Structures are given as structure tokens and as C-alpha cells.
Image (tube, rainbow, N blue to C red; front, side, top):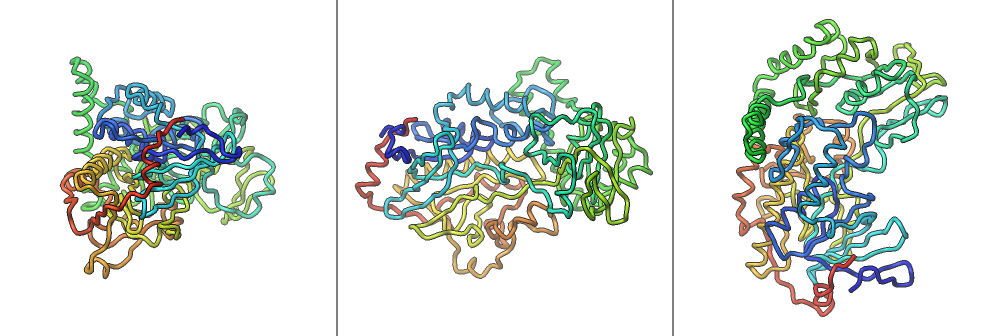
Length: 516
């Protein structure tokens, strides 16, 4: 069927593919690459609500936007990274564009499609997915044997800003970095930057040189790792003219080895690691400023730790271009904010770098045979699959390591699972709890004692549940998963396979090409 055929001007003909990928950011592009190379002949499409590829790196356009992870591990294992470890959004976009061009993936991507509903029909063993075309308002329907959720984990349309009293009284502009206005004139203005995480640490040094002054208001500090935006091992291998693919792999492995050791130490000797991190900050601003403004209340790795290239946030403070204030907002005023301790901070522009809201499986309305499925009522299998949602996988990355590391691992698993289904002659696979697992406690998506950023705490009620066994939770341990996931027994008791009789409708759908 021709996907451009109009039905009454409001709906288009159904298109069928073997695998439908939701999202054309770093996860979806990686999934498409692996599917194309590991499963040649498999038909697939990527749907994305944006007008182009890139996801986060397309929507985030605030000044200075960059990665907070090194690109040797944030990049794919199959595509060498040849730039500085910390990269700008434009550099990451170029990298993703090269993956699309080098593998002819553009033909498989449909932009401007916002997925609304997804229903798995057991009788036909197909996902029926509806999407809105944002250019015309028409509704499109897709069917797929497998649904691969790669849309990320936060809502792109808008960020999270607390509802402070008096916000309507402020006479200047209130801006969230996630929806930064292209025409915002901030040069020469007094800017109040609310937040303490990686976004605030990126924005401050980008704004400070041209702003009248930037004041960083933080309720509580976070940990940073300042250092050179360079990798000595990569520089040495490049000087020796080592093949870029070898350099990428060697440097990637070395970084992962070091990160593993650092993460283990953060939990085995947290006070020592804390002292080391604070010493890195003190090298720039001294122990007094570090104690006053840059000493977190929590132990390392309970929230993300961002790398700060060349300590640029601290250099801006040292130069007097920026200052730091600690406290909580009582109310906004016409000229700024008043803190609970009575201090006032005046500003022309207030930037709320206060985080984002979780998007659980793209906030799509899921159904099973027409009956609603609430993700919060499901139990996750290794953070990839879910009880009650057959033929579906979700890429949800790591907090203490680069997100993309899990893209490669989950892609290997999904491709192996699809091959296993084909070998068994199965149309349907789902994960299910056995009698013993059914008695497991239903816990939150992550252990909040070990990792507790605000966006997870705000959204945990909507996330799938986890159990108390590794198989039934997202361990967040890349170094264990890279060994465990390839060894998963696909004939294990948690996997249930079925071969459904193909109804005429299903047969026709599978025969329909997925033309544009």
C-alpha cells in the first residue's frame, strides 16, 4: 500500500514493517544500524515527532549545549569518534548525520510523526500504531511485528519548572533551557540561573562572558569533575597514526576500565572519593569557596557527576563574571526573587535549569487486545522488556555511564531475540513472572537510596516496577550487563513464545510495503 494515499483527508493507508522504531535520536539511529547489519532483510521504519534526527541534540539549543559524557563511550562502538572527548550539540549532530548517510538510513526515517497509541493484537500478533502527521494533522496507521521504543526518557516539548509563588509578577523573561527562544537577547543582561546540575554548569560559562553578570542560585550543590577536554591516550595513538577504529576501541576500553574502578570506589570508600572530587574544585576556586558553594549534601554518584571541561564554570566565578548564591526561593518579585532567608536577587532574565519530566515509553497510550496497559502495572525484565507488553523493547540507558553504551547492548539482544523467534517459528514473545517471581516485592524503577535525582523521584509512580532479582530490574551496571546480556538464555522460563494463526488481515498487512 502507498503510505501517501489519503483516506478522507484525515487518515492515510496502513503501512507494515517487521520492526517499528519510535525515535530518531542517538538510540533509534543506533537501533536501526544494528538491525540493518545484524538482521539484513528485516523491514523497519523510524518515527520521530521532530522535523529531523538527533532527539536531545536537536531540541536543546541553549548557549553552550554540550555532552556531559565523553564521546568515546557516548558514541557508538561501531563509529569511531575523532574529536575532543566532550562535544557540542552540533558536533554530535554531525556524527549522527554521518551514521545515517554512511548506512543509507534516511530512507527508513519518517519525521514529524507523533505516536499516539499502540495496541498489540494477539490474534494477528501485530502492533497497531497510530501517529499524527504534524505537517497535515492527518492520522497514519502502522503495523509491525515488533515495537522498539527508542524515544529517550524525558519529555522533549518542555522542561520542568517548579511553580514558585509570584512568577507572574516578574517583569523580565523566564526561560527554561529546553525551550530556549532563538530571539532571546541576553547579552549585557543580568541573568539569574537557577539550578546546579550539568545544564547549569554548561550554561554559566557560555553566558558569563557576554552577560552583565550571571548569578547561579542553587538549592544544593552537585559534584563536578573538572579537567582538560582532551584524552592523553587518544592523543598519543593519533600521533602514532593508529587506525581511528583501533584508537576508538582502545580509548573506549580504557575509559570504561577507569569508570568502573571509580564507580566501585564511590560506594566502597565514598568519603575518600568525595575528598578527591572536592580537591579538584578547590584547585580552581580554593577550599573556602568550595566549602561554601560546591560541597554537596549527598555522597558521590547518588546523582550524575558531570565533567566540566577546563573547569570553565569555576573560571567564570574566578573572573568575577559570575557568582554563586545558595538558598531556596520564597517568591518571585517584579525585579527578581526573594529567598527564604530574606535576601533578594535582581535579574533581567531568569533561567530555570531545574530539570525535566520523565516520559515513560513516550507517553503513548498502550493497549493489549484493546485493553489499556499502564506501564506502572508492569514489571521490567532487565529494564528492556515488560510483563503485559509482548513484542516490545525499550532502550533506557545508564546513569553512571554513557547512555549509548546500552544502545549497543540492547540492540544485540533484540536482534538475537528476533532471530530466535524466527528459528522457533514464533510470532509472539513476552516476558512473564513465574510462581516464585510472582511473590517478589514490587519496587520502584531504581533504588532511590543509591540514585535519586529529582526527575526520577517525580516520575517514579509512572515507571514500570522492578523486582529484587537481577533479571527483573535495570541494574544500571554496564560492566556486569556487557557480560550478562549476551548470555541470556532465550529459552529460559521467563520467555513465553507463541505462534498465532495468521488472519487474512495480518497476512495482508505483512505484505504491504512501508512506502513514504
